Image 1 (spheres, rainbow, N blue to C red):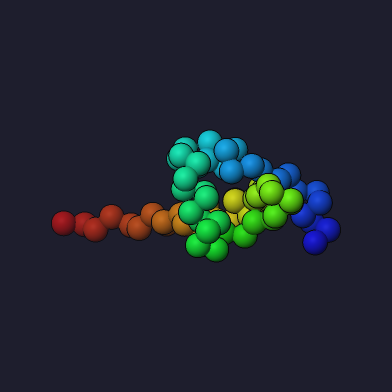
Image 2: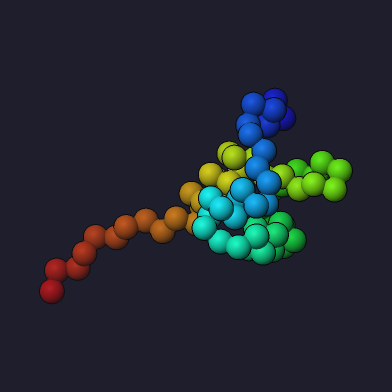
Amino acid sequence: MGALIEDSLLSVKQVAAILGTSERFPRRLIEERRIEFVHIGRHVRIAESVLAAFIAAQTVPVRGRRVA
């Protein structure tokens, strides 16, 4: 939990901007519990490190080209 304090918390709007999506997409990730989040009163925040891990997990690696 100590790392979370050192990690910046992002709003849904900020996460959407980073992902290049509408705010609906991160809200759906939160609703479906597909991304870890923090509830602070009425506000929902996502740690930068959690967002980076989510992006890394969704990244498709490059495969070598097939020689014809």
